[in-house]
Image 1 (spheres, rainbow, N blue to C red):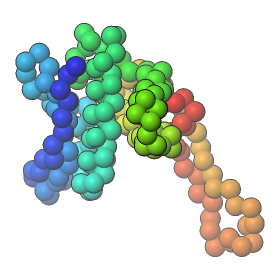
Image 2 (cartoon, helix red, strand yellow):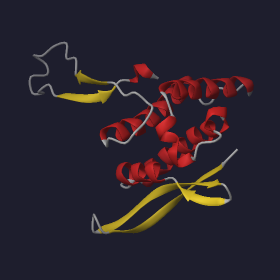
Image 3 (cartoon, rainbow, N blue to C red):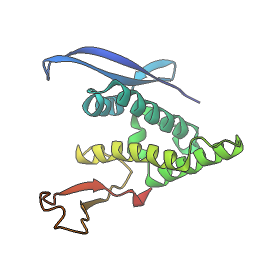
Length: 171
């Protein structure tokens, strides 16, 4: 099994012209320390405004990558390329794996809801890849969501706004 770890990092971003802090993910692979560029770019872009969010996302991506590293089909793949080879099935199997671990430990944690929400965080990582046009084996389905207001008279001050969200039906 590969040794994945994450750490906070702080530096001055020349692109933003300000100091930023976020977590980075590293892996020991073939006797070298590697930064996982794609997940780290995601953490920079999506979590630099909150250290707690950065830590949570880094934790979940690390857990998912550790799970992938145990699968036979990922043994010969460089961890920096995992995002290219991951499929929706891998994401579903990760959820089943976590449920199975919980049952084996006869524990109530993590709950099924937490496991699903964690998978959604990973799905949003793959949605970000999709939007950035970075290759990935995860198929993202986008759907339009509109708030369902039953009584428009009570909510006349609210204008319905449509937004696009990732469909979780694929996981």
